[in-house]
Length: 307
Ligand SMILES: [Zn+2]
Image 1 (cartoon, rainbow, N blue to C red):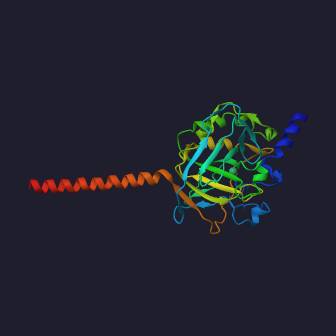
Image 2: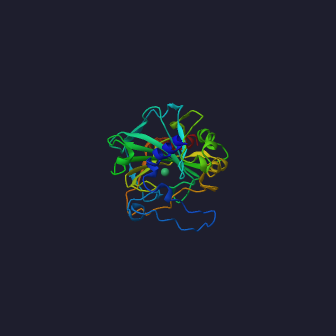
Image 3: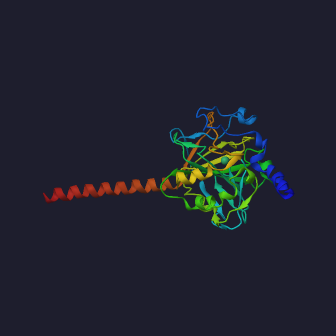
């Protein structure tokens, strides 16, 4: 019992609980679909670079960067920990540093934790997705995530959207297998081991096309420290799988049916669309189209000669 209390105390210092963890929450859309989104206070209410936003192709700025580089993301994690923190399901305890670099990033970033939102927080061209996974990275020049949250280059989050499908997602499935250990309110903030081995790679589709912009944490303190990288390629998930997450409790007999923040104003921020491979494919496509045109012309000429 004492051990449990100590663990709770430690966890209350963690990233997602930077301020008043138990005092903020999401609207209860089950009772009232139109319930206004609660005020979370501080920067959450007054910030000008808040997240999430609607990501739109129309009007986005074209970006070109060196490819993103992922180190150790393919390593199978045998000792991952999972916790229901009352706001999400969060994974941590990676065997080695998972390091992200390249793209528009000036430094190396290391994975701190992974959590999910149901439904998605970001929308793409006004379309919402059933699930969004956030891979939260800390800039290595800062010693911890709390410190990093004080700087605009402190945190990078990779956002991965999942689309509705009939095909269950294996990686999400292996997380769900251990969900029963953390679903109830009594188990809240008590970490459990993820039984299945999982590579973080398995949660990330192709990274050749993505939106990137300067934004914030989507939970209090809403620190404006986040370089967002939201991939446009999505992975399948079934609604049955997403519904498993909706069964976690945040109060006695109260299930967390939704944990996505409402869309924030863009406020004339630069929204950059990076299409790394697409550009190559486009130019190759154009080349072959030209080649095809030449063949058609030759064909016409040959036919005319035959006539
Ligand atoms: Zn998140």
